[in-house]
Image (cartoon, rainbow, N blue to C red; front, top):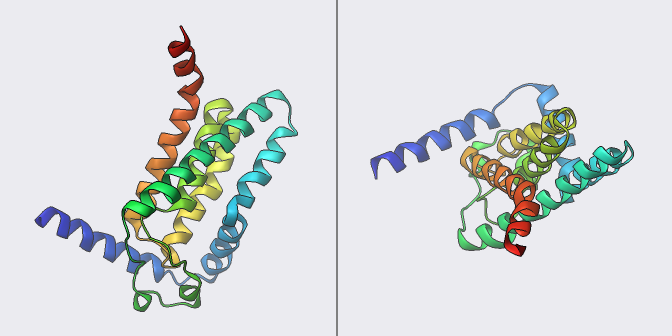
Length: 181
């Protein structure tokens, strides 16, 4: 029990610290990145851009979108329904973005799961493009904590879920072939 209490306290400290970042650049850039990621617009746009680069880009885009779908399904339709966790208290957030938080469960971060799943799957097909996609994925994860929408542990679990979805989609064709033999 003591370990869980210490983890919870660390999670709360990190949330308050991230929400208090004073940089006006952070307060301008992170919300813009999150807004573009809302409803997966950013990742669909990245998929269209990747698809325009040829066969490798189309494979990467397809893998990214499939992984993102798996991650969002697991995050939003399964885990958020199983565990209801309240969002960080509004009092911890010292800026105006605190009012734009969703009412759904905080655990896990679906935005982070989608971004990491897309980036991870793209990286498995085309590492350079995956690295480029990882930049906004990390920014979205940071924004979710900065605005008080999530605790850092929600974001960490969302990232792990995204990586698992990317690995599953990467391995799925081989697994299907094994089952068909």
